[in-house]
Amino acid sequence: MGVYVAYGLIVLHAAFGLLQTETHPFYAIMIGGCFALVAGLHLAAGRREARADHAVGPTVTEAGKAWVEVARVCDIALNRAKIAQLGGGERVAVFRYEDKLSAISNVCAHQNGPLGEGRVIDGCITCPWHGYQYRMADGRSPPPFTEKVSNYRLRLRGDMILLDPDGLPPGTPVDPVIIPPEILPEGKGARHDQT
Ligand code: FES
Image (cartoon, rainbow, N blue to C red; front, side, top):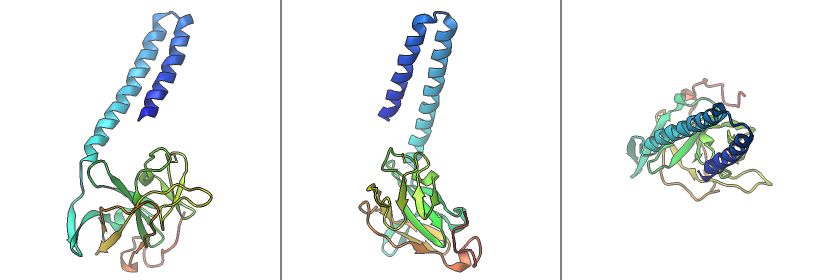
């Protein structure tokens, strides 16, 4: 979050420099109005996200432990993700690709970008902010990069995706869940990347 304060100070620094020479009140009002608008939008978005951070999806007990219901398989578009809320600000991105499902932390190791808003490109989860990539199998960036994020276990109950809320240490290999052909939304023949 500190980076937003830094951006704001840089903008104010440039704005005060401009106001040294442009003394008409219009410039001061325009700069103040823009600053208030951008700050207001960020605060409103922050409040909305903070409320969502406290929500937790419904849980069910399977194999003696609590699992979080994420979504039905057909609710996740191919090569995209559904973001599951685990409460306490923790979010997990559940991706569907080929005929598989994998789950990794929603927080990019670069600058905390929302991985679940990215897509699968060249077999890797790709962050929508600056393009860092992570392998499905273990949450690690492909060589020569060294970033890694936590991944999570999944299972299916019918076509409902269940998530183990206990994250694994970053970089731990986890087998993907294979989606049975009868519940693949694209049909039995659609097993491969269609991008
Ligand atoms: S925040 Fe993900 S690549 Fe920068």
